[in-house]
Image (cartoon, rainbow, N blue to C red; front, side, top):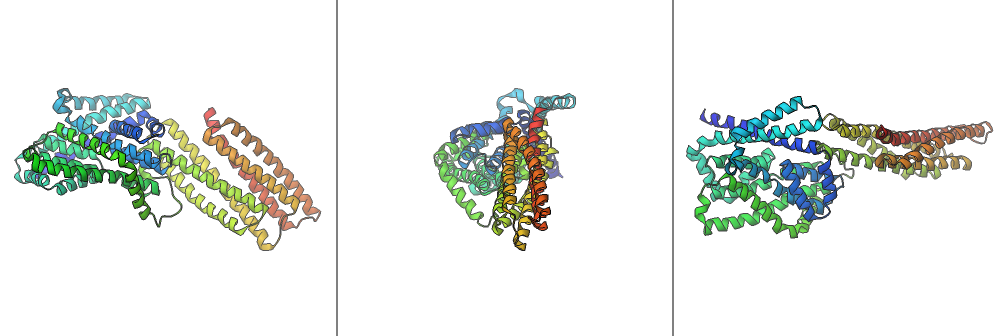
Length: 547
């Protein structure tokens, strides 16, 4: 019963701490909109800027895991290269120390006492969330509410573990962890990996330190282990991603393992021989924050010059793991849905990849009209199968994203993507139809007349141009490309009518076999429908922006 009396309040306090931290981080991210995403894109031009940016963003959202997941998402989407990612990952380790200073502020800033400030913050945040009408107002309320809940959680945890100070078995456990560095590192890594938050893990350690339960040496090794354990989130995020994204997660892991190996060796030598009395003394919450900060800053300063070597090591490991990797890779990762701005960008990247594939199918369709080729026909069918899978993936991901708490602009962009992916899939279907018509010609040994082939080729060339302009109009909101798309689609409509009339004359005048005429007519219709879908794509974003 005594154990339950400690565990239940501690578990409740931990839950409040983690939920408060996540609520505050989500509020900050949503209030900022896409700004953090833009900062990552613009300012990561070199590793040093990346370190500063990674530290700043992580300090704001109080989660190195969230920052590294962002990084994995950007690398997976091809927005950030591995050198830029390395800098942000290093900075994230520094930024995550802010939570420890917030928690320890109750020792050096009495006005932040959870007993007075936390309940007030929770109350103010709740009232604003219930009464506020604007999106950003509610998100700011989440920040205040999360801040208060975080402190209340720490207060609960600290109060619940206070009786353990009289428990000899529990105290001896920390003495053992202090005397055995490997066990201390392992304990910190395992706990952090389970809860997937180094900030929460540090908060637990500080609540135990507040009760006077943690010796200095045990705390140092546990803190080092926590830095390794926090890598689990980035590793998991890379599992469903491409090789570069896996490499980014491994870079984070290698960086922390190497730093821990170096500084734990130094700590063992210093605490065992130079200052053993200091090692056995109890550590305070503020000292934990200081050790955590110094360790991460020192690791970054030491390993920054060797960051390219860490990248190469991670690439070799990722390459070995990806030998049997399938050629079709998706940029979509369900874990990115926790950061909607990143998820939306990954969704757009996937859509643009699909548009490139569909363009290849359309180009091949033009080529097989000019000169039937079975290898090209097979490639068109292969692209159609890939397009079907991509359509299903994009649609499912977009629906998940649209159901989340996202801004109005993000919701609008998600719906636009849903519409465009539908048009792209139908263009791919029409390309497959053209390949089937061409295959019929090959199998029957028939062919188009020179005049008929020239008509189809001219229409196919214009259809390809119309498609290119439609994608440009959608991606860049290019008004000139939009106008060209409309003009070319209108011209293709006229060409389809003229081609149909000429085809009927050839058949009635016995200048063309009826079966060839039907295939010609079907090919005309497929090209005209492709141009219709191209026009839909161009109008989707151009018309919505006009609204």
